[in-house]
Image 1 (cartoon, rainbow over the protein chains, first blue to last red):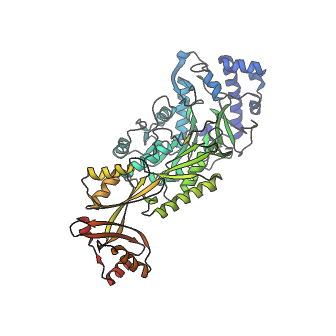
Image 2: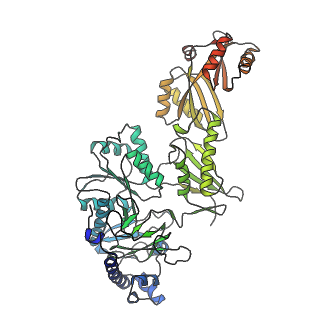
Image 3: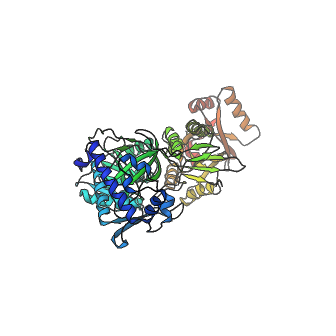
Length: 433
Length: 143
């Protein structure tokens, strides 16, 4: 079902006309109400009225996470704080967090956007959604929650953790839709099997996952274990939260609600805007937001965009799943490595559980990379020589993926800390700053 | 006749062997024989216990990776040359040993040798032809 056919199936020409109108409005609104934009645009001698076409957006400066941090906590708000009815925040692991503010209207927009996405995943008012995203400052929990209300589904606001209870509820309440981060989903599946949960005969029919890096192999593993299709949900606190892009049943890219967001892809080095189907860093602009309009935000997420009409009938732009970050890239011995590459290699080894940790050290001026991999029954043999072969095989797969020799260490099951939210996949002990 | 041996994956890290043995101790499982093969980062603990099935259940419940393997136990005179005479038979019959470990049988003053090879049935046949006493699994579990 298409939740908002008028918008989601609009012709390209009409979408762009609508976007231009909304862009011009929000630029004027941001310039008039947020010091950051006012001062920055003044100093660059660029004004909202200079934007006459959508392409003119390229004349505007970017907004970065570091800049948003400087305005902590409420400096980016465009309205009187009393009009803000809810705040969320990024985790702030690398510095001051970014606080996001929402007015009543913003919450309604968020509900609408998530409702569209849930409909893409086949969710209706008949469904029971088990939302394992954290309810708190993290946007994941509440975003899905509001959308579920809008659709009229039953939402179980269980949040992350209490994992055995999750499985009990999945069974007793007859959960039809699961929402989780990929690593937590895999963890739940592992536990559910231990508890004797029968996925073959469960009522789970659809899964929404996001907030973490993942690979196609990981999605396949999730779908296999839960015996249901899994759809990617993308979002970020700065722009709103989950829902910026959501996959439909075609699973070929995430639909962006283009009446709310204007997506661009830039080359992270030259900062030049890229055309369709070209990989680069995703840049997003809020086209409708009262509380905290964000213009040209550099997400650091690597994606590409197509405007081709989707098989599902929707005409909205689609972004590919995030294949890396322009900033969590590891450089080891001068070679760029993304954790997703290691993951891809691991998933090639038959039956390997995707529980791993990358440890980068520099013991004697030279970088060393170690990948800890949890052993499993399938990977354990009674003989040392066979175990050495397993290790060697994993090392070879990783080497062919990243072009570097790594040391693989097999560790005991469940010895790598499980995430209750985001997984810590990389430990870098080098002092390279 | 074949003995059920339990193999346990251990990280080569302080306290891991203790944790495995402690798990068995808490389950009141007595270990009859034990051997360890190790590398710099992991090892394989091989044990023979009185109630293998119970031990496996207990270990798996405590997140250990466990595999079972059938091995053969033979009885030897606890005297010089006892072991080498058996190995000579294997050698003459082209049987390649994967690993062996041995312990003494207190009551009978005999040594028990536990063997793993790639073809157990051939091993049994060869041992019988050479009149070597194969110890019944029950006897090993209940030493």
